[in-house]
Amino acid sequence: MTPEEIWKRVLAFSIQFPDWAKPMTESRAGDLIQREELSIESKPLDASYIEFLKKQIELEPRGPEWTEILRRRMFALEPHVGKEITTLLLLSEGRSLTIKADIEGGVLISIEEN
Image 1 (cartoon, rainbow, N blue to C red):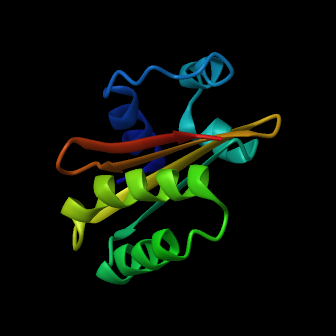
Image 2: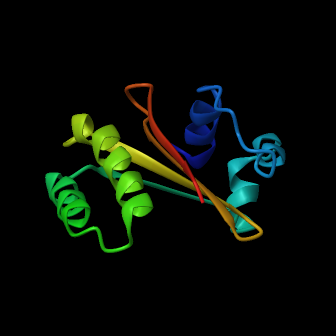
């Protein structure tokens, strides 16, 4: 699947983009990638990543707020182990929005803004 096809499918999820990211939704994926405002990666979700998250939650290395972020991430991803997961990262002026989806299955898994 091309970046344009992936981007169109993600936009079809009707995500409530933060104000800073809304202008990006009017751009083509290729243009965003060229400006280094978008990266797209698709790969199978390995169970070892869930185990890594569990260990990090247990260790709580960055405090309770980060642990809660990891906990939400783990619960969102766990049902999708073994499936092809696409991660889109939008970047602008020091802000980021990470979108994880099962594009083929038409499932939006998670959105994290930093």
